[in-house]
Image 1 (cartoon, rainbow, N blue to C red):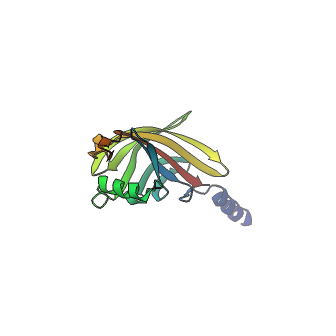
Image 2: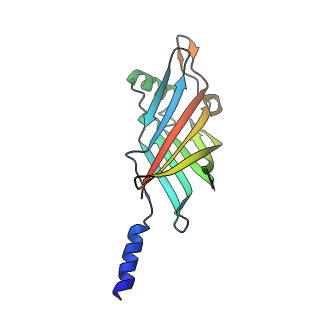
Image 3: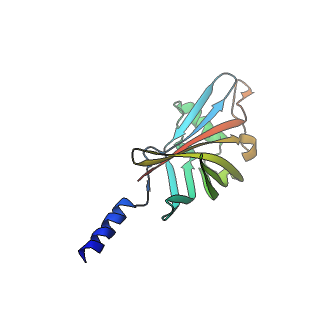
Length: 174
């Protein structure tokens, strides 16, 4: 009687579902203008994950980040970005996966990206690695502002580039 209980406790302890680590997970955007480049970083992610317990794999993931949670290090630029992105009307950026395929290099993730009131299908490669008892998932996603009906910000009558780079790091404690 004692051995089955001990086995059950040890199994549940060692085979726990990983939990999202919001203290080290980030989403970063990078933008360029003829005069300078900048980045805005948010660690205000909300993540919902469906795990396949047998395979120890993610089956589905949804990520929500508030537009106002990004910090570029310059409050006037952040305020201007909130205006450009109509943050009061569209306060969140949402990604929901529709398919995840595991490859030798990591994962190929397809899903819907909702940004500025527009929803588009996107696809990105995600690298996954185990670091100090944590699963770390990283990737990049190029986004064209015009695809999401975003007016490009300008400085001295020159508009910023249409292409922004989204870098993400989603971390799970194991």
